[in-house]
Image 1 (cartoon, rainbow, N blue to C red):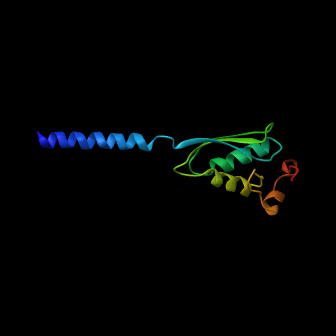
Image 2 (tube, rainbow, N blue to C red):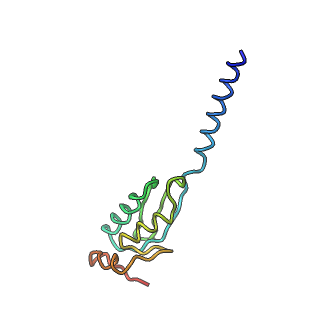
Image 3 (cartoon, rainbow, N blue to C red):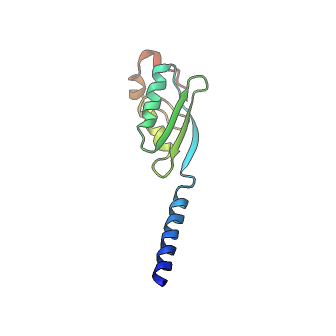
Length: 113
């Protein structure tokens, strides 16, 4: 009987620990990303989805915002900014290198600050 109670308690503790791990690992972020057109949208979103842990990435041309949902246990918003900058697009906190920016198609070369 004692063994049965012990097994039940261990099983219950295991389920409780798993439930706590799943809390608040997904987070929403909005990141300013410079771009001009549909090609930019595809490139920015592809770069964001290239980061392991990104669940959702949608760039809006009108407000120049990349709307993200990411698993914070696998990546950070800084990882996404780095990937997007490597694709040639400036973000609010990280600028693309001149080489990466100049590699963009002419219609995608937005006005840099």
